[in-house]
Amino acid sequence: MNPIISLEDVQRSYGDPPVLACAGVTLQITPGELVAIVGPSGSGKSTLLNLIGSLDRPTAGIARIDGLDVNDLDDRSLSALRAHRIGFVFQQFHLAEGVTAVDNVADGLLYVGIPRGDRRRRAVAALERVGLGHRLDHRPNQLSGGERQRVAIARAVVGDPPLLLADEPTGNLDTASGTAIVDLLHELNRQGTTVVVITHDVGLAAQLPRRIAIRDGRIVGDSVGEEAVA
Image (tube, rainbow, N blue to C red):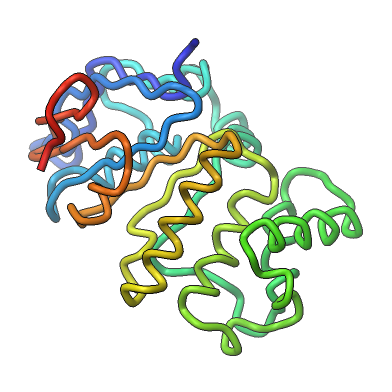
């Protein structure tokens, strides 16, 4: 099976003189995996997220996402890759406050050429998928933190992307809500979505079947074929 994420000695530097935020990462993630990339603040997690999500290009090395070399794509093609193949979930929910849950989710399809009525129909299905079929017309200020994160996840998966990237998805939630979100990520993965969670929380990482540890821009452990990394 071809990997959905393939990084070959990927580097990313910033500034002058250059500082390596990603210092030669080689990594493969196959379709259907549920993976945590875990490391402390400043370890390079966010840079790796940007590279995997095609939000940034490597300074050196090769980053292939769903078989496409990021450095071979122009900006329009990268935008299309993100719109059709990758869903993003962040610690901050990034919901429009005066807009209902169903319209927040439907807006996730604005840039993929789907008619408005079909966007709303698919948004309803996505909210039902994450257990919020009874909150369709609620606005964010009428929802709990866990429910708002579920709306954000529904928006990320409404287009059925094969890859979901979740950046600290439980960071703003209480323990019970965070556990429910982790359960939801497991369920989405069982339904066929490849899920990559970026986190500093080793407790969250321990709940996922594969854990990749990063420090100083380098991978320092991978639970595939090893003991679970701390």
